[in-house]
Length: 197
Image (cartoon, rainbow, N blue to C red; front, side):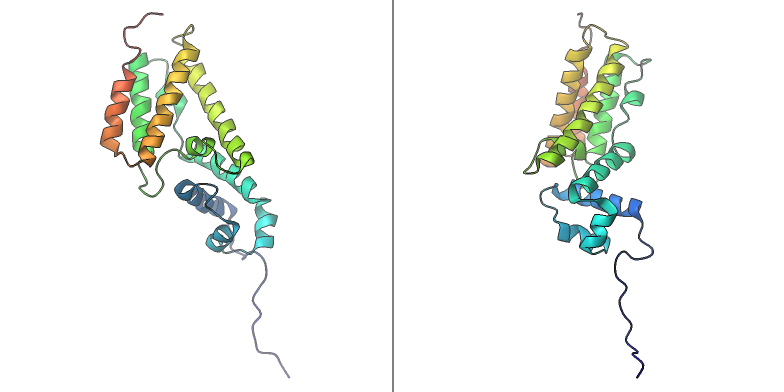
């Protein structure tokens, strides 16, 4: 007797796209936070079973790390361009804070910065450490860009900039709209205008 039942293929579907899967995971982590996204949520959204998930990504934390890196490359702020040395300091900060206000409110379902919010921490120390490492890298880029025009105060201004960005991100998560965040950013950009070291 011939078995006419079609067996369901196991593992990843043939058309499985890893980059697309990382993008879907990134959106989930951004919307809900690392701790609130379960392995079941991920495998369901990606259309794969747990063994295939582990084969493709290693672990949930490893996938989160890839999602953070993807976010930084595709949706993160372009600090070097925004803080270009040909701009005055207040112009550069105004551009940076404006870009943050827009970026952190672009998706109403995933507000704030994925890296900053991840660095605030949750129950998983490894996930938090990954976000913190990326946030430290961003701060160094900011510091280096500022040092090209304000060598003596580069650390002070970089601390200020990262604190304002963290505030804009948290305020976006709390529901402040882009116009209010823009106003905050414009005010914050004037902090060092006409000041002398």
